[in-house]
Length: 502
Image (cartoon, rainbow, N blue to C red; front, side, top):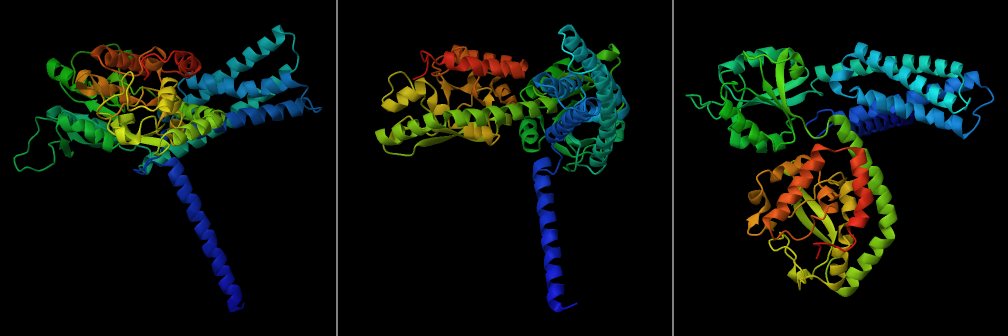
């Protein structure tokens, strides 16, 4: 073998390794967060896509096997497309798309069998009652059997993958214990069996103070700080679960702690392992063998976050394409009327109180604008240009925020992001309304429930910001895809007249 051949082979090997590294890095960026943990929404989206593909492909296979002449029309194709979506919908409503559910393949196979049977019978019944003999009972039966076998195999593989990621520490829920004391030692021992699925970062407690000033608690966990430092730590460390370890007898202290935690986008559980008061078993949730009293769940589960992210990307891209001509005209008008940049960028608080740089079309004279919004725009404000007055009244100035949506920083629908120094009367928003930061449990939106109900624009009174927060919390607590679609549909009508928008 010549030296040239050897060099060529080495070059190919290096190129192959380089390509493999790039693929691995791409997978790492797509499936893992900044802390190296597997993104559960991405994992669940992958499972859903696999389920849809399996049901669709087995449907096509069953139809081809029993009807060699091919599809007999649009109705047949509709049945093939309807079945996968319906089965996935039934599984989703039965809590099949969660990491904890995927760990138990036997239970998953039972749910899959039920979902396939219900959907197959329902579709067959509808077609029979409608006199549409486009899918024979034999086809439906073969389809059901093939789908059951393939979905069952996928669930066994998914369970092994989930357990592998858990064992390697890539799929653990990051948790902290709130409240120390002697009971915390027992709690940590009980939770130790869940070490592959749960990572306890440490303890927050006002009462814990070691004599030598060390950071270790009496339960061998790191003391992370006091209750006042908890919120910032949860945001910076992507904490997903708070376990409150306070005796039930200390009711006042418990209420104080929980009230402080309600503003965080995390799951909150109260450990009941030492409680002498026993409730109905249905009142508890369990982490391993430890009974927990659920206080609050995140507004969106992992599956809901995934669905909303897909909704944002699909609707956002469609709206951006439709709005492109209008955005081009607005950009020309802004540039023609006054000097300065076309876009105005402002830092605002978004999800989890993280800073987001929101894009808008510039609506004010450049030398008169306030980047921190210490002075909000009022009626007949001299700082607003003629073009700016129109685009603010019609909310056309918000259209560039579609780019924020596509970057994942905002949603189409959600609580509006407010400027950092925005005030209601003489008070900052978060000082005027006690529960203001609870709005940040979800991504901010271009439009929202408060906006379509008329609570947009100037906030010169306490009532206006209170109404905004109340409507935002109603949206957060009652979110659904249909609710989002309704808000999107009525948004153009709510802009007619431009109430409170200057």
